[in-house]
Image 1: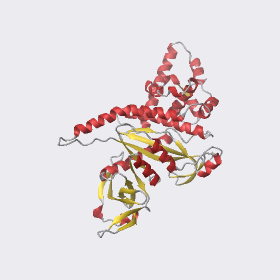
Image 2 (image 1 turned 45 degrees about the horizontal axis):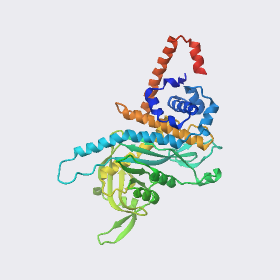
Image 3 (image 1 turned 60 degrees about the vertical axis):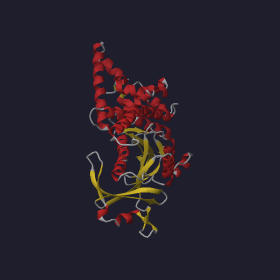
Image 4 (image 1 turned 30 degrees about the horizontal axis):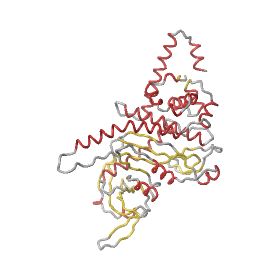
Amino acid sequence: MPLPIVCASDLMCQFLEMLRPVFSKPQWKYFETVLLGLLHCDERQTMSGWLRAVCSRCSLCGMSRFLRHAPWSATEVAAAWIRQFHHELIPLVQAEHASQRQSQSRRRGRPKCTRVTGALILDDSVQVKPRGQVMRGLGRHYSSCEGKVVTGHNLFQALYVVLGRQCPLQPRMYRTKKVCERDKEPFFSKIDLAVQTIQQFEPISQTHTLVLADSWYVCKSVWKVTKSRNFTIAGGIKCNRKLRLMAADGTRRWQRVDAYAESLSDEQWTKVLWPSDKGGIVVEAHSVRTLIHRLGACQFVCVRRGESIRYFVTSELTASLEQVIEWLALRWEIETFFEDLKELLGTDHYQVLHDRAILRIWTLACCLYRFLATTQATSASHVSIGQCRRSIRDHHRFLFLTWLQQQFQDGLSPAEIDSFLAS
């Protein structure tokens, strides 16, 4: 049975109210319908599915116009939820600085500078569309989930994490050069998108920014722009990268990182705890301060678990091995984010043809994710995004039953209520 918009919770209405200036009055109705539809739709997340899940008197044609033609800005929507995130986190950041100052031991001289680090995590995800032949922006991309090249759209995303709280930035679409030529769009590589994101990013005041990325994005361009903004970068590198070694006689040579890792003795590996939701995994790690070809001075870290060895670098030369491992483990937050977007909000279910509508669907899904993350952070117990979604749905169901009770008390018949919900 469709849920009337009036049954939305006060918490959700308060969150959405910050976005009212972005939309006109007719657009606002469709905006609420899409977000409630994303929250309550149990079938495929399409426009028809949203309209079946929400009683809002919206039409399918109107929904299509809202997503493709209506004059509202996805950039302004993202900017609104990012401003709200900053507003929420500034008091928490200040409290964290005060807590660090209070915990410092008394000693002569100036107290140590306190630091609160926010992680800007960069990655992309393929939305598989094997039958979407006439969709704009459609191309051939490698999917790590499928383990092969597939047809679909590539969602480039940045996730900002501060004190355990998440805020997605505005999603963008990566198009291959061939697709850009076909659609007559300017071409930007994934590296270009990453550089633009770092250049335009505004961190929360009194925080230090840590850029986290996988081996695809750890390159000279991203490294250079990160350091130019006094940010720290950490991420994976491929096994064919080279690091500089210095012999006892002062001679220098370059060696592949995988060959260097294989030459290490068992005594040179240190057991550390790789953080995870299940309490952590014991791995072996080794770090050395060196130069990586085309990156410059950095701290190189290799992590061994069984027979598998992975390679990482960070521009923070003085960080401890445990601190670097904690940073690297934090990158997994964006993988969970992509999984939640697909599994809970169905960001790969769309059937619209225009790339503008696709980007708007991704933006509205990220907006709802931001609301779920806010609810998760304010929850009394540790819950997942999926559990938050179920809790909100249950509360809306209770409000719906209360609304039905009120309609019956006001004298409406079951037929009248059914006609209203079916309209």
